[in-house]
Image 1 (cartoon, rainbow, N blue to C red):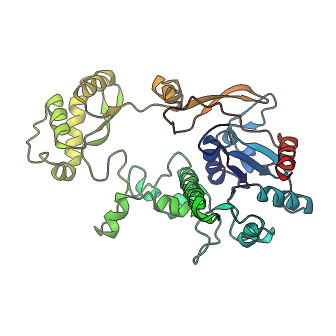
Image 2: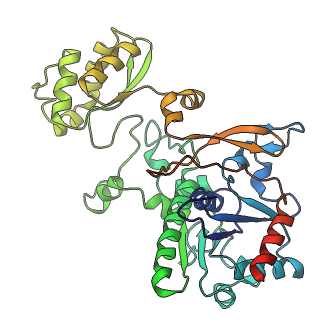
Image 3: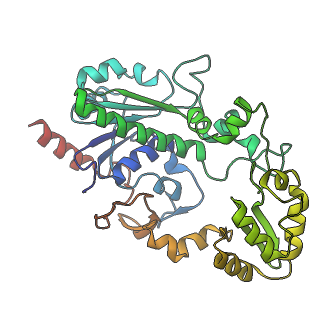
Length: 385
């Protein structure tokens, strides 16, 4: 497969979501990704569902989401034969991805020191729940636990009394994204130094790293942010509003946009309560009520067309099936078709990056457990020669 990482080999020892997502991103960029799975069941996400699909109803759509563009081999890291094969693969790899609990890889005989003895050029991506060190560095961590511990749930939901998890496994996915970003930086640095290094991130770091203005509201402003439902924490009007047949979203980020929205809805833009963002936010409940009173007169289609004509950011709230049917989604390469060994041609969510001048890339389906054992061994023997 072509791509920026077309000459990079990734040894993926990770499972579930954060590590596999990072490795999948590297595979999307052209890397050869060799996924190592235990012979007894493989990656635990193969058992996560519903929904399950396939003739036997045993293929997890969860697993399909994080493992495109990978080769699968089945081996037991606790066996002498398995450890020997991993050592051989480490010598031929550029990147190793792992998301074991702190200390597990060491106990298996693959400490960072040992990995770099085998291959000084190896970049190691290590993803943990709460960090590899510190007073709670050894804690196990799954996505929802990290969302709560890292404050995200306190910002999400209708009010601070009802914290909600984000619907997607955002801590895992962000950790994977940050991990892949760190790997890219380490590989670039290796072109100068000739040596690999360890890249560390965690679910805690990933979520804390995207607090953005919520973080500075506390660290600089001394205010603890709370959940604001479907409205922005600092900007008004910016959120979801009811109209005649449902809800639309309107995002007003500057005064010019506010004057257009006010004129459209028959609201005085110079009303002292609404004259500037600071005042609009202070009187946000009154503003929402005034806007929804006007919006109730017409349906979503009318208001979206009117707001679009004014250049004001606005949008529908689509269900997942509507997103994948939307021509704009498909035009951006965000749906790809792969040929699965059991399911045949299936559509998967596509990679979020495109590169000018490159033709659309062919992607390979998430593998069956151990599907590429012979192929990987043949490739390894050729590399060793």
